[in-house]
Image 1 (cartoon, rainbow, N blue to C red):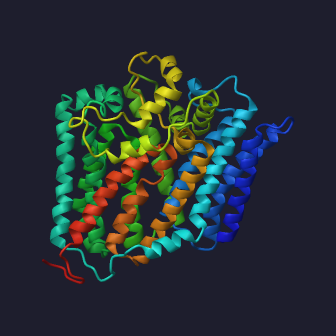
Image 2: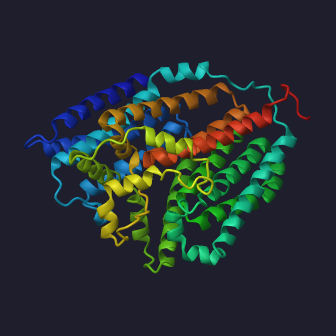
Image 3: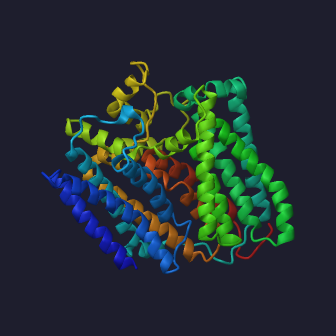
Length: 476
């Protein structure tokens, strides 16, 4: 199975590399575009299909979640745009682009996807996972410590939400200025309040769930009675903030915990869950748009969700600017921003701006001007996608290298979880990692920042729940 996928990925990478070097070939450019688009779709769908045939498909494998989001951002969007003539934001389209630009964009996307799959399926990830320390299966969580952190995390999330709403003048005032806060809140020094709301409180609920499962039917009913109100409260707070994408990790964490600890979720149930989540996110986007005075249309809501991240358009725009002389950014600014993400801007007024804002000003300045933003102090971020951001960092070699490393990391995480044989802390750490891993497809800076923050939470949890404990003990 692995050899088949590696051969597919390797052959696709060679073909995409040749297309990147040659660009459009006279009279063959349409065939090049068709071939590259077909490869993007096939490389996304075939690996999970092969795993399904061999009964090795894990719906909550970080790799599969990455591929699913990659398929939406690049596969579905490119197919709708190229084959069906559909378009997203007209301000992002390049009306005078030639076929060579599109071929370069699709080639970079294929190289990204192929490199990721190679990183996933080579044996190196398994070797690294075997070298990592693992938590003994006999280790039992302390009920007292679990309750302390879990309910402390819930209280912290509720306190942060109430403090944020109070600072904004109430929920109604906050919602009236939601668009401004979503773009300026981070720079105003209150962005740190979103972390307890969108990350700490959901992680606390995840810990409660992992500590209780598996449950028999009668005890499960009583657990649901008091757990669901806390879950709905967490979801309500995230909905108020307007970050619908932040709901996805919360849902993934809870269903993954159920999948690994209580009962595996079937492929049919996963499809129902995915479709339901897609429709809910589309409906939420429609309602939010209607609250801003726009018409309430289901078709527009679904199209807006599909084209939420116009992957190919963004990559083409970045490639065009790079060909016109925009210099490479390098990796150091991104790493510096992520290393200092935990420092509130209120304590460090001179903290560097997020890379997303810098990238937006460099590559999409004309886009923001066209939509009516002020000339001075443009503060709207834009998701550059993994391919676009990597091209800005170091060109096509950065795309290949970063994608390969991400594939390797995904394989290491999956193998490390398997070595835990159901150990709760293994599952806790893996689920926290898995739930936001697909964000790399959309915004590498957000993904890296989330990894730093959630990694800190996971390390603290492992240390807090295990230090001073003996294997098999249940009380302190």
